[in-house]
Amino acid sequence: MTLDPNSLPQVRGVLTFDKDLSGLTWLRVGGPADVLFQPADIEDLQHFLRELPRDIPVFPMGVGSNLIVRDGGIRGVVIRLGRGFNGIEIDGQNVTAGAAALDAHVARNAAAEGVDLTFLRTIPGAIGGAVAMNAGCYGRYMADVFQSARIVTREGEVKTLSNAELTFAYRNSALPEGAVLVDAILCGERGDSTTLETLMAAQLKKRDETQPTKDLTAGSTFRNPAGFSSTGQADDVHDLKAWKVIDDAGMRGARRGGAVMNEMHSNFLTNAGGATAADLEELGEEVRKKVFKNSSIELVWEIKRIGEPTAP
Image (cartoon, rainbow, N blue to C red; front, side, top):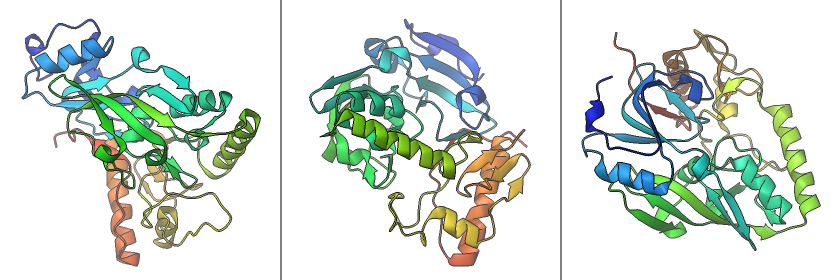
């Protein structure tokens, strides 16, 4: 651990030093964070960020569903929101969800109140990450339902950001550097609860039939070159889907160490057993090179990769 514990503010939440992050990511790889901070509430988070020396980097981490933490770990402070940030409140068509609320839980709670946020049901992860990445599927994106979000800035100030201020793009948003998103307001269309539940059940069935949901993955590895998600409709076009260009390059099932491009869905980078973060990232880079050589298409990582590699 390279960070001086005496340089950190006193908090009501939990500070854990040299925290192994591998168990907090869906791929089950990665080294330690100098410090993991789990704030008690928004005031605790504000105080911590306001008093933390500016030269100490901060990384907000969700549930690790779309993340590779490199084997050398993360220098600085990883902030992970927990139980105090996972509330879900529904008022008419507006759903206020804490950043730590799981996407699937938000979809189900909304449907029960006749609000259609069904596209979130099959998206892995929590609302904070969904906003940051403008998550979407079946032709719908967070940008379509997002009203506003509260963030705590690196200076410890609470600010509210509008849809326009986040300038959403495909798998991207303009969250300020070092800011921690704490909750968001989403607005869904009205729908019949039973109909919405039936739709989500069908989406789950289709996902389980086409994606390796029982394997250690981090969701889609690369963004679709077409610049949009699968619509799930019969007229969906596959030519510029990431899995298609990976297949065309002969990389379905490709392996490096314990990492494999999944046989069931080749855009799912998988820890098949004993993989390191280096195995996974290096296999991903090999796929990118092979795809570019085969089709002149440059795949862009959808999985976020952070931290330092293990020293040689």
